[in-house]
Image (cartoon, rainbow, N blue to C red; front, side, top):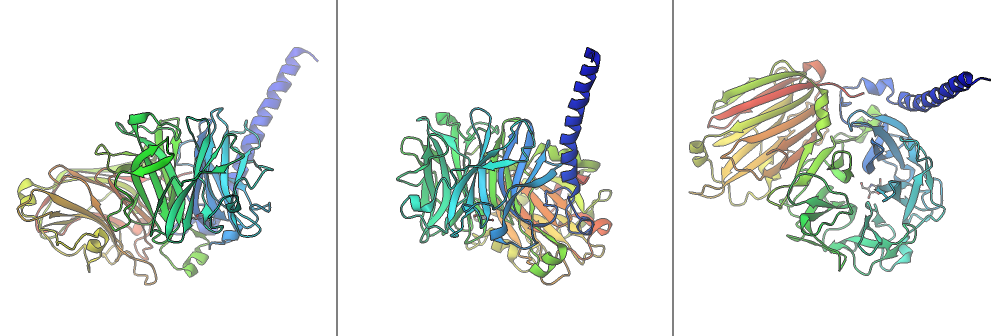
Amino acid sequence: MNNMVWCNRAIFLLISLFLANNALVVLDALHNVPNHIKNQPYRTGYHFQAPKNWMNDPNGPMVYKGIYHLFYQWNPNGALMEVNDTVWGHATSTDLINWITHSPAIKPSRPSDINGCWSGSVTILPNGKPVLLYTGNDRYNRQVQNLAIPKNLTDPYLRHWTKSPENPLVTPGDANHINSTAFRDPTTAWLGRDGRWRITTGSQDGRRGLAILHTSRDFVRWKQSMKPLHYHDGTGMWECPDFFPVARTDSRGVDTTAFNGKMVKHVLKVSLTDTFHDYYTIGTYDQVRDVYVPDNGFVQDETAPRYDYGKFYASKTFYDSVYQRRILWGWVNESSTDKDIVNMGWARLQAIPRKVWLDESGKSLVQWPVKEIESLRTTQVKWGNKVLKGGGSVMEVHGVTASQADVEVFFKVSGLDLEKADVIEPGWTDPQLICSQKNASLVKSGLGPFGLMVLVSKNLEEYTSVYLRIFKARENSKEHVVVMCSDQSRSSLEKGNDKTPYGAFVDVSPYQTISLRTLIDNSIVESFGGKGKACITSRVYPKLATGKRTHLFAFNKGSQSVDVLSLSAWSMKSTR
Ligand code: DQQ
């Protein structure tokens, strides 16, 4: 056979291999969303959802060879949770927006995870190889920590994972005082200056919440540290801890192992089973004592720093080395009944991935939807310099698909009007309660409510309002309090759903413009106040305001006028 023939054969072989590889991916993608689910009104267009059935926590997000991976807690057998059946669902993407779903990466199969493969994280080792640590619910229903590695590192989709023969690597019995049913969700590991890896795992000792610390030289043999990384009394169980550095001076993300002395602060996030919310603190990681010290202690009241003041739980970040940013994933619960969920055949979704960084004040985090989402924007409607008159004005935003849209508004209130703002009641320390006053979005006060009405039906029988109210902190004071609400009390004519209004304080000066961005996607409303200083996510299920029958408005129910310096609204394409 001459060289030419060999050469052609080799090319043919290469192409076949390439096609086979990609055909597999396409086949994986084809068994995605069943038709009866695809066309449902509450199925979202551009948020990540499992093809069917129940999904909860995001697990082990990472970028490997330019491909983003998202694993997630998934029940392959039904739309309600069955913790003992939980597998790691798996999807990949090149842009964090369009996803291909693969077969589950890990499933219960060994004594160390036979009752469920629960949450965990991925660490990219210095040689570039990813390793995965996850909690197994073992044959005795004890929570233990296991390891898995990719079977084939040349497959950029990393579709197959091998469990370590050494599993379980860490058991609650290895160390004293670990409650075997409260020992889960290992974090991404970080490498200390002593050459030892560290992970922290969520736990509970009575009402004390704990982030237990383990160290290892080889990632296989782990030793419990004498002291936890951090703990706090009275909180109950800490699920899904996340521990990572943030740059002090700019919005760039930093790798989990970056310490850089004075250049970084550290963030510890825990998910509390008691309240079903994700709380974070910002502080200092003392590498010598191997403990984390939050700047302001651990606050757990209604003003405690949270990623999101609506539905958002068990979140996890990862460092995106491609764009040097830290990205946050969080799952969003349903507000409907189990009966409705079973009828839908799927439950829950992931919020849009958000870039997260330290605010310049150093006191809070800022979050913003990843820029890739802007590639879904199509038709744009733009307003400039409109006035929403006091006394009740409502203006429709025509020209966009109001059921699937991205809207950003910049409001401005005159300095004179700010002087006239109502003084906040001394007892109003809980923003959620402020937003929950009966018909809060209709109550007239000095400044606000003003904002957006989304997923609105033709005759306003149904709507969700996302709005702001401005109060003076005290009489004769130039200090103001800005409250952001997401009120779904009128979101649906349906009676059985949870319609609790949510609220958050937004740390912005109303003397400047105040921005509000809302991502509307059929049954989810994700809002960002003050350029991402406060976020609220809601789930709503309108009966009338679905698909093409949906409207969008800007409104002001306050007695003073508010300027809309600009409003941009885009129709959003569905993802592939
Ligand atoms: N979900 C997982 C646990 C985790 C909890 C089980 C948080 O690992 O603690 O699905 O939602």
